[in-house]
Length: 126
Image (cartoon, one colour):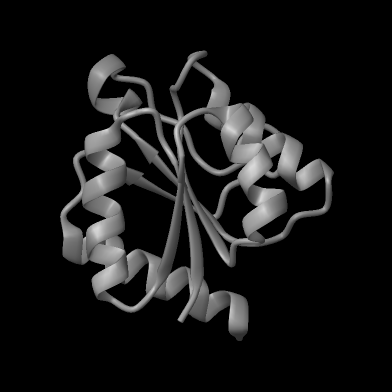
């Protein structure tokens, strides 16, 4: 199965996501900040990244995704966000500003997360 890196400052989200994805057969690594996440990308070499929008800074997730794409990293990125429900803001994929493959609102149902990850990995293979 796939190596998945979860970058989120909420330990509960990381723990729950890790549990369900490990149960689905994936190898998980967690990071709790943008800086930790960037280091983990280099050391873990993930097949897929699950990334929170807001961590230490409100735009950490967007900035990390932009940095990774500028570096030529092309693994799928699933962005988890509660921004839309908390602020009423809506945003979508944008190759430059929001270079991610899909969005998932928090809280996420375990089955939905496992399905989205499987879909993104399938698209990467195909």
